[in-house]
Amino acid sequence: MADRLDPEGKRLPIKLDSTSNGEFVPIPLDRVNRKANRLAQDWASENAKRLGLDRRSFMISACGAATTLLAFNRANAAAERTGGVFELPQVAAIDPDAALEALGGREFIFDVQGHFVGQHGLGRTGLGGADQFIKDIFLDSDTDMMVLSFIPSRREMELLTIQEADEARRIVDRMEGTHRLLLHGRANPNQPGDLEGMDELAERWGVSAWKCYTQWGPDGNGFYLHHGDTGLRLIERARKLGVRNICVHKGLPFGRRSYEHSLASDIGIVARMFPDVNFLVYHSGFIAGQPEGPYDPSRGEGVDELIRSVEENGISRNANVYAELGSTWRYAMRVPDTAAHIVGKLVKHIGEDNVLWGSDCIWYGSPQDQIQAFRSFQISQEFQEKYGYPRMTPRLRAKIFGLNATRPYGVDAGEVLKRARRDAIERRRTEYRAHPDPHFLTFGPRTRREFLANLKARGGSPV
Image 1 (cartoon, rainbow, N blue to C red):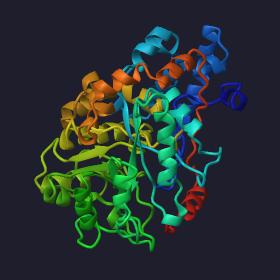
Image 2: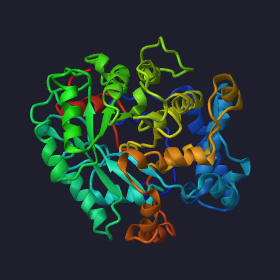
Image 3: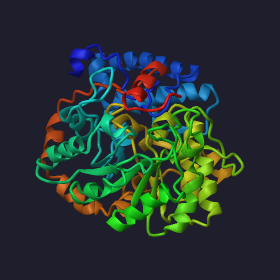
Image 4: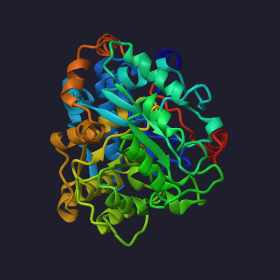
């Protein structure tokens, strides 16, 4: 498909564009991002010629990804965005070994927020289908495991049913049963039928966690996790069923309506009330379009509100609150200062063992570009010293990439990798990478109009 759609290699392997995951209004690239993309295109042409390659062959190589990230560095430095950098040598742009050394890796990558959109899915390029999902996630990226999640919708307008999600899992499991996919069960307690359906989701479908959206409701009104008739009923039922992972969307507000419920103010309250329940905060409370600076407890929004809620309720680092990076990292890649503050604050305040990798793909196509960017990202020495942020070491990256998620999900990383390194998908991956064919496409909405169409399709509220 990719060669037919992009035979001249016009698409960059690291994708900076306005695509959203359908949960927030797409935000156009700024002038620095546009300059970065133009520079990457120019350098790709030059470096392809230097190596005697056509552009398509160059783009799908590690040198293509390295060239793109180095161009982003140049544009960001010119704009004095120096809080973070993609740390790789200049020679990686034309030296395949140096590029692989900087961007390759064999970490255990456990993506706790993936999406496979079923028969009602939307997308400019026909998003949906198990074969496309498996190719994007397991062949074109280094992902080892993924949790299939859900997006909010009325029950009769689901973009992905539990049956479709389970079928995608079964397709992978039939390939020698390595169980690379886990499932969420959607449970919004302010929607009739969701709480009552939790028993079947746990017993029949074997879900590993519950996914809820506190800012969403069939009438447009959200809820708080610590309210007795909604959030507390959800948590108590989860405890009773023995599935004690609550994955809650915080941040990325759909609009002004029920905005207060999108904030992470209630996380610390319920984490204190239920120390035996894990609260996995999806998107970490991040609000696209708002700058993230050093921690400010008086801000009342974004990542800062998650940290404030946790700390003011006496929840210690590395306890039962986890911060997830789906869409948050993908957006932060555009501005390295923002990326440095987000990752730095989360590790410093939530804990180095409690920051989780998520890509929100396949809304953004294959997650490989997010993986490569994170592998090379470094918080500046200035920010480390000034704000007490950590240095991004291989050990810390490995924790975030997957090891941290093994604790709430009860996964043995060593056993997973032992099975996965010899399963059918790994064999397909090895064969495929001898002649890779990535498409470098994104699938989510890129404009406000597309976003509103997506929201309407699942019975959402206008922004």
